[in-house]
Image (tube, rainbow, N blue to C red; front, side, top):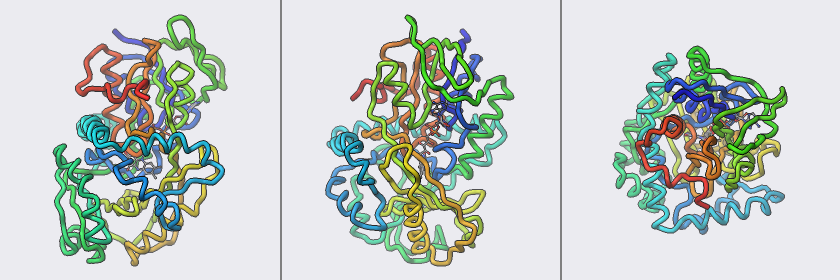
Length: 412
Ligand SMILES: Cc1cc2nc3c(=O)[nH]c(=O)nc-3n(C[C@H](O)[C@H](O)[C@H](O)COP(=O)(O)OP(=O)(O)OC[C@H]3O[C@@H](n4cnc5c(N)ncnc54)[C@H](O)[C@@H]3O)c2cc1C
């Protein structure tokens, strides 16, 4: 039976969800204060990796945090004024590193993310942008043999879940990515992974196709949700009220206020990250490269080469600190001394992150006409299309092809 469905958020999660719901014949309206794909989904590293099934908080993270914070080139920064707000989230983050929880999270993420190509490709091909999805594999590099050995558990988690990870030496790294030379003694090659060559164009092109297929996108800011006996019944927007039948929350970092309003408070935090894109880097990269220790990816995008990473806790609204982008620039020059810096651009985005590294996917606990698809943190691009397909299954009354219990909103 066709429903009237309203989605808040036209990031990659909202647009992939809208596309899958429209394929089922529903009348779908997406509401966003900005044009599609211009918030966090625009500037990410583009990685599409079932191998991202390893949680961000791993055993031993607590011991590493002081070193990260003290190092001016480190991957983590908490603004002093934000510590009191960040601490409860960081506490949960650190407390999600028990072995049993790590294994269960890796299982849940693996089930979701292993479907990424299968779920993305039909949407991208239908929209005429299948060329953006590249299955090249990628390389992870280490500064020392010892650092690689220190990540042994993370590699075991991946291998146990069917991800092919081939250990390589300096010559093997150079053979795959000649621009790296032999600067790194040890690395891993993940041949089955991939990337999106322009994440913003992907979201915008899917959004255009969704509209050609009869979907509606309204540029409005949602100010409130009015709740009636059956559940959410009206969106109050800056351009008037919108009656709703069924609601899906895909509002990225802003989703927490809406899920709380619907009776599901969740610990959602803005985990801010940065990128620098080099429009004419003078580099040939056949595949993305990841620095395991400094936690960034360098991706050969269609508009240039992009280095993306960093984690900054400063809240949603604080001004960007482009000093964090300069840290990425310094890493880029170290990894590729030959890089041409002219005409590089910088960006900051807010990952919608849960402390246990798992998104919130499923029905609201109190209302049958409301669904959640948010909180994907570092895996919003890779997890978006699989999530959209799950929401379409739930709305249609079909059983999703994975167990979604680990993603339920009331797990905290
Ligand atoms: C540096 C960096 C690198 C990353 N690299 C990767 C990667 O390689 N692979 C990967 O899978 N993920 C990556 N990510 C994460 C990924 O980008 C995010 O998880 C993903 O973009 C989240 O998508 P979303 O649709 O949930 O949110 P968003 O893209 O933030 O979209 C949410 C939308 O909701 C709208 N909205 C919110 N509130 C309202 C309101 N009140 N009214 C109207 N509209 C509203 C916003 O305007 C926005 O358009 C990276 C992130 C960063 C910062």
